[in-house]
Length: 117
Image (cartoon, rainbow, N blue to C red):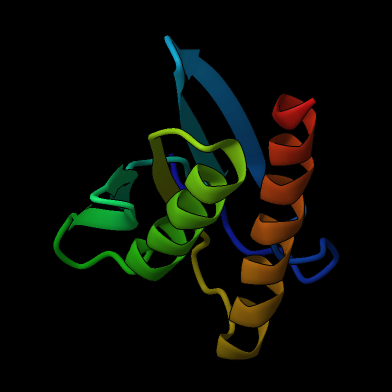
């Protein structure tokens, strides 16, 4: 079921970020609106450098967000991190996209800080 954009609600207000421990590694789920998997990115260290690989479902645009979040979290936590992201709002205005991305980063940072303790 798709959530319809509502001007009375701040775009991205319902974004959720959940961190799941996977042994020594971490998985972050980032969703908002109509939850789905749009892109998945994994960051790991190889030969002293952080790498990122991303898979994107055709027609989705979460790849830049998931890649940046995976790299940021992997560097912060010093381990392999995967981020699965899926954010969709019907009829979202272009000018609201920056607010949605900002809200996703805000929630992601809060969750990353929580698991870093």
